Amino acid sequence: MQIETLVYDNEWKKHSSDLPEDEYNNVNIVFIFGHTDIIKNEERYNEIKKRYPNADIVGSSTSGNVVAAEVSSYELTATAINFEKSRVEVSSLTFNDGDNIEELSKTLISKLNKEELKHIFVISDGLLINGSQLARGINHVNYGIPVTGGMAGDGDRFQETFVIANGVAKQRTIVAIGFYGKNLKVGTGCFAGWSEFGTQRKITKSKDNILYEIDGEPALDLYRKYLGELADELPNSGLRFPLNIKKDEDSPEVIRTLLGIDKEAKSITYAGDVPEGYSARLMKADIDILINGAGKAANSIKQANNKTALGLVVSCVGRKIVMNYLIDDELEEVQEILGENVKLTGFYSYGEIAPFNDDIVNCQLHNQTMTLTTIYED
Image (cartoon, rainbow, N blue to C red; front, side, top):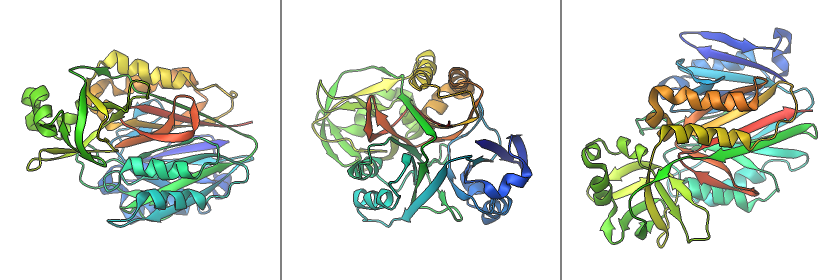
């Protein structure tokens, strides 16, 4: 495997590379991540397509771009991968208001060839889609392999997100990348690291990913009660206080990120479902615990070899906002554990997709987590 990483600042510049120029035509796939206003520029896409003419090109707008062990200050990053013995295949679709996301995501995954398929990485619109429905649809097509990925970001603006799927970046788009080959070794890790606070309550009124009432009280009123002066900064301040939900005592906990509020309805919209009857508790951040959580995600991955490998990072915008200037610390922790041979790329997202615990067959929508995917070739 050979990897080249470019960064954009008025022009594309080489950040790191072990890819010879005479191999550019053989590049299998390029991941582009970056600022919303820049990534939707057609010229930027065409420049990458010209450099790697035969590659599949995918990516998204983000809330921060990962390059090596840091959040890049550059507007765009592009990571080109040339596999020695493996290949990729891309499936994508666009959706409209009212479309059945669960059914569409089943179709998306079904388009991928099953033979020698080792892993699927999914990138979706981050605002105009219910991530829980996306994950459920993916799980209907059970190939017995892990699926990871994330929902596109838009900084902390929450206005519009874009996805690249072998064309100029568009809204309302989902792309799935299948990785193929008997020589591929894939590892995944996912961990949060938030602390609970406040009373455990029950969701008493909701619809899909919109929360109306907790313990019979308007959801927005409850947030305002706990956030105090920070309530004036909603919805952005809500990223510091995600919601931990679970079906019952024996069920796994899932974190939900706040995406928007409706002051009139006193409701809150999250990245994924918040079902009625589930218990719920607000969470808060401890920086050391968050960084340790990133390390736990990395430690769950078994190193395959010391060859150049790809490390796809999808971490949550909420973590980035809370950790602020310490955000690179979680990436440095990951890099140290995985090793310098694993070349990190990825983005800060509005939602993360990864298996839960030891269940590699079914993916879940996560929020406020660090999720990792490593891809090695033997």
